[in-house]
Length: 430
Image (cartoon, rainbow, N blue to C red; front, side, top):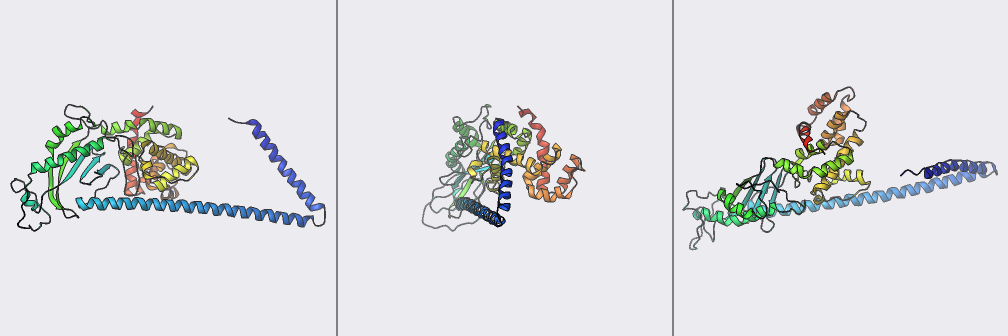
């Protein structure tokens, strides 16, 4: 509430201070022959005190900044080390490591890394693969399935060690052995995910009867509809641990309107923050689709996380400072929480539109520059676009074409896709 009395007192005080100061100056200057010298000494002393205090504040600020940057360095080092350990553990058995991306969520079984799921949120499909040893004892991989019409082929044959019997495995046995692992992994990705705190595939897989597949009916769905379609994939291969294995693969389609279901899940949060930040909610929906296809577990090679693909140390940090006027260490798991990600992502959009392009009143021009900056970065957009054209002399479509022509292919396509997708989210407006 506006306090009129407080502001009146402030104005009176502000008037009184310079009058008092003038009286003191007059007294020091004319009261005695040495008054001028006394005033100069007092002024110098006061000025020196101010400089010392300012220097102390600068030093404290520098120390705080250095401590924060050190914390960021340590966090990034931890993330890289954890990723490298995971990669090495996977390569021991799989040979090659497949990581999550912006549009594909990859999850390995935490116990032995012998089962892997890949959820493609763009193409709408789930692939689950399980590794099965193709021999017991010392039997060669080709001998294991020699009675089958489709023998397992090997990349690197091993010499047999004579004198030790081996038990044969048929293709059917291999698939049966993979069955429990595939079932467990599907159950896992259908349940509430610990970092996003939601079931990412909820309401997006149906059985032949048209019923949603959930934790309760997943076992029946797997036995009757998934495992009968399981296939042994490709050649057997030897991991870095020396064990010969082969992949068993199943593919599960998601329902056709899976994208709409995920978008609708975040409707309340998007509309709430759009209203708070005075943004077009359709822009937020469109950016999320383009960045992650509404994959809350999205992760890019550049280290961006979550729905709106925020890098903790840069975009997310800048948005946090913009909102709360303080610096803090943001962790990647915080950005996997959809509401937190939308909050900071929306704030970053607001920051771009107001801090960087607040002087551009044309709504469309402002939006085109903000979209390009979300992908390319505001500093480089200013250098490569804003400083190289007469924005005021262009209409909005001319600017749109100029940005696309003078930006990298990724940014050019990004601006086009985000802009074209905005209208379809009209249906989600409150």
